[in-house]
Image (cartoon, rainbow, N blue to C red; front, side, top):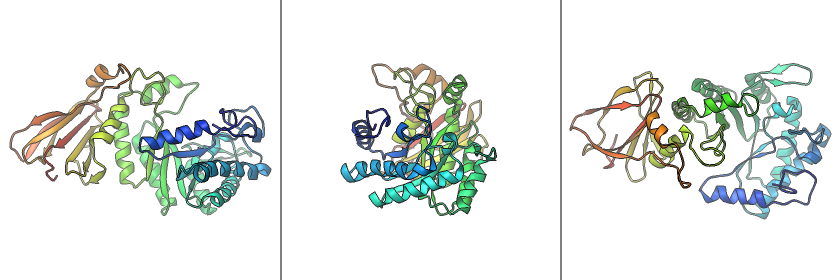
Length: 375
């Protein structure tokens, strides 16, 4: 989005149009921009020009820091976009910085950016859940590199990390570990999905990221990460046939598209306490501003599960959203640019203290009381 619009092939003059358009579009839908200042450096700063993920020599870190500060100055001083969150580069282990060099780069970049805008929160280390190989051949684990940054008192405003795993419990354990190392920092998981491979192995990535099993996996991941107090979670990504919620050409939706719809359009913003005693069933309960309560039941089993739910609707009337594999297969294609979404069906139940429901295999059932009665 800088220079000729292709990421900084040469140094200046800058063309900010694409970047500005993206920020305006993000804020236009009520979201907050979250910006990684690089995934590798611009070519004119690279130690080896022409590489896909360019690395800066330590003696030029000051120039790279100035470059990042100039971006923030344009966004927040010149254009008043009020960007709140930035990170210094992205996955430095893949760019092959030594850990000490990345710490030096972060420190210089943070200092320069703060002179432009003190309010910007500057995060790191933006690592993936992987080994970090050093130039001497040693390897640091995710926990080892995290601990090293803490021991060195690296001044991150917040902690950013990535994880791709088909095991939701592995995702949650990274957050639990980071809380022990950085108990006073906000945690932001800025990339989450089930498989990371884009080139070789992309077929496996597509199968895992677009599988029906991804629905209960993501529901559990979000459920537990929120309970662990993670401040933000960013799903990777929106428009992509391997990782996305819909494909490149906007012809079909991934299974998790409907889960996002239910979470953002049906569930409320205020979470309330709920629990389950079934090993396969997870539960998320929320309250809307106007009083409606919603209960999301997600099923991690490969078969439907019958559950008993205390009746929380005073007139025994519910809107029920039943998201099953069968529904997805019939409704995943996009027609005329409009994705179908799971609709709520009004269901009247017998006047009982407990009602029985069936949660579809690896799917989701959402119950919404239509009268605002308390759970």
